[in-house]
Image (cartoon, rainbow, N blue to C red; front, side):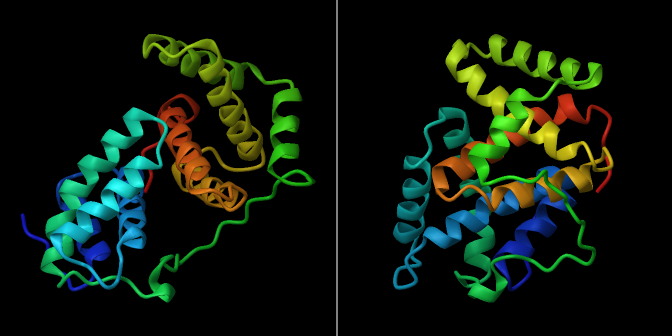
Length: 211
């Protein structure tokens, strides 16, 4: 399959959809490709410039698994970048306009740290507890130490807190992720948050397949 559209991100999205990726997986890969584009020097869009941008993004990630995912996406996205004339999106194109905005109410808070404190202190429901236990069991199987698991579980609890007033489906989960992502100010912590949100999704919404 080729990448035929003039916009590399739209082309990549079309390619992934034709390959049968689920909607949330498409969104994640397109966002990763967008981050690679943002790292490219506009004065050097050569193969070397692309590799340098990928190295820069991968080098900022503390999680080896996340780094490997970015490298895979970089390989998949590269033909779309080339076929689109190595075009970098304009600033106005950085965030796609969504036809339907979903309101995401968060508890009153004084920043991200305050929200996380609230999430850690909240009493979880049986369904929430089951989701956390399932995620924690998977993290143990992946070999993560207790401190690393606790950091991820704190983010998982933050996601649970944010989902409480929302419909339990993929669209609202993605809207919550976008809302919370704005509270993370560093690329490294944003990538970490996105990684946890992706890992926790099957435990929070085990049967969610909506677009």
